[in-house]
Image (cartoon, rainbow, N blue to C red; front, side, top):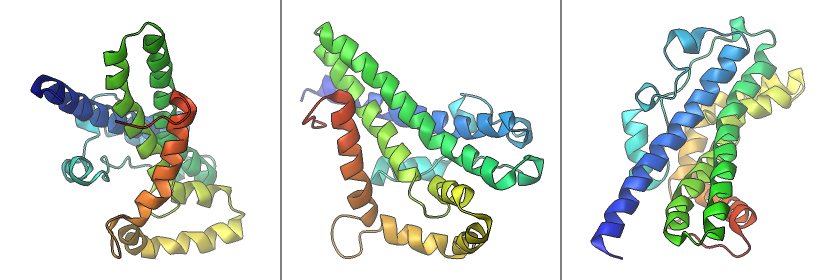
Length: 211
């Protein structure tokens, strides 16, 4: 790998991560706004400006360890017509936006591949990958990840109340997920990367391997 190629790829990684986080948090804010909660709009979150959505610590951790977060989008359930189900929709909007972006980028990948623009397709691989990682990771049903509220929204009311009590242990569960306690691989990696590999193969072709 030449120095020029390595620098270009680093820049692409940075922009891909910033874009993935921005789209994810914007989707949360947009969904909340459309469902009747003005809180994200009043806080300046219904925007695609990355500055509004980046959490300094969470962003640094993504670059260092592959796991991190954007600035959480606050939503007031009292402004929602159906607080539990609408909250689930708002939570699901983030991962869904990353999945949609990955699909759109995969379409560009195949277009440029058909034109034999191999360098461009190489540069598109990481943005597709990071969006899939963000989508799958955030759908793990552990508080404060989006998957927790999605599950809470689809459960019957009695079971949802019991499920909500697990919030108190969310940080413990999350640490168990992301910290490699018994090997060099975290439990989160073992969960998400087989799914991400499957989705990459589905979007980019059989036996695709991220370089």
